Amino acid sequence: MSSPTRYAVRLLGAALAGICLWLAFPTHDLWWLAPVGVGLHALVTLEAGWWCGLGLGLVAGLGCFVPVLSWSGIYVGTLPWMALSTLQALYVALMSALVGYAGRRLLRAGHRGWALALVPPAWVVMEWARSTTPFGGFPWARLAFSQADSPLVYWAAIGGAPLVTGAVAAAGTLTLATAYRVTERNYPGAPWPLAVAAALCALPAVTTLPTHGREVTVGYVQGNVPRAGLDFNAERRAVLDNHVRGTEALAERAPADLSLVLWPENSSDIDPFGNLDAMAQITKAVAAVRVPVLVGAVIERPDGTLANASLFVEPNGQIGRYDKVHPVPFAEYIPWRDFFRVFSDKVDLVRRDFTAGTEIGAFRVPSAGGDYWALPTICFEVAYDDLMRDSVNSREGEALLVVQTNNATFGFTAESEQQLAISRIRAIEHGRAIVHVSTVGVSGFVHPDGTVTARTSLFEAAQAVGQLPVRSETTISDRIGPVPEWLALAALLLLVAAARGSGRPVRVFAPAAPAQEGTRV
Image 1: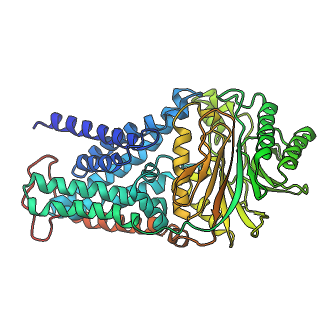
Image 2 (image 1 turned 135 degrees about the vertical axis):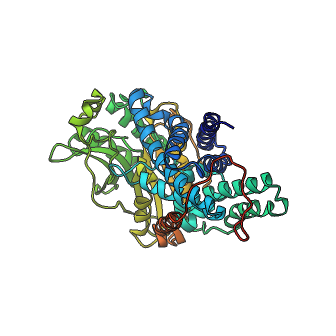
Image 3 (image 1 turned 90 degrees about the vertical axis):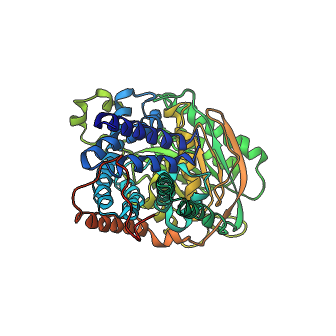
């Protein structure tokens, strides 16, 4: 096979790998294609070297992120969508370059097993990097977040999303190891990598998750908005009124043991501290249900910036407050505004910047069986490992997680389903129930085992009441924190260091030389 043909085959394989990864995410939900995509990616990059690996990784990354993140350009245009997708793809490209460099050298030395072992920690470290950089990172569309319906998701309770990503990558790599053995006609040794991959799926799935706890009755209101798009709040009073009416409707059928009602992010874009009429409407809703209501509000700070806040409004008039600690760059604030305006004047669609809060949110909720904690996170915060973990670990005692979100700016796209899938994984990871409530859907009650009840559709007004367990026990994942990522980094560095001693690399599709004793996979 000539070099141009060989490279064209690799490019096709990289593109197919990216497409497989895309199809693993909602709303396609073909979760089993994620390991397939990782395996294809490893096949074309492991022997590619640095520069070839870089290009192949970029193709694979674009093949995944361009369609997965298509919702990001639905109302703001192609440039922001492609910029975000390309930035995320660059992380895959850099990972692929490193895997191509180190894998090639290890293969030359006859260490195919060590070369394949590069893949899982490389994916974990890559996702760690793009979840934290730049501007706090963008952890959307991680391998783990495609696995809400997969048996691999149960690794989340042990090592969080990073361990789920590692398990997906390991399953894909083990499948590739089987393919290598079959092509070499090493049939007796072919089944065992697949057996290990099957064990990866089976072991956590047969483990009994700690999901039971005292049940409390809670409700949520999905008020809907007058129109989808960036101007969803052009009629801010209409959005607030929708949630007030929804709360009054919920009150008519609420059971006596109702303890809390949740509104979504941006349910009051009118600052109730600066607008007495808005505060009166919220107070009216609280009086109707006679329990605390958690309101998503936009608050003006004294310095002229804004806070994306959760207000815990109690029937006695007391108000607790949580300010979002991780505002979204280019959506809630514009970093380096003058610089980025050179590329697009759409940065000025964000007219006023939101600034970050500094404290974890926690509200004590009275109930018939005793008080419990409501721990809120707002919108994209659900995708950040440390924010969710810190919230769970911030209070002792029974707790319920709350995700308040507003998906009106993404229309009828997959974004809302992707976010609900993240909440499902977080519920398993932390062993906590979650109320996931959106202005426009999808909303629902997420149980500690990841199942969803009282699920709504997009752009409908809805209310729901249900019982959810509140639990105080922590999972292994809560206790070990970022240890899986540090272990992955250590493993990757050791493997790369081992690879540096190798000589001239082998060609990509050259027939494999017989492996030395003890080096087969």
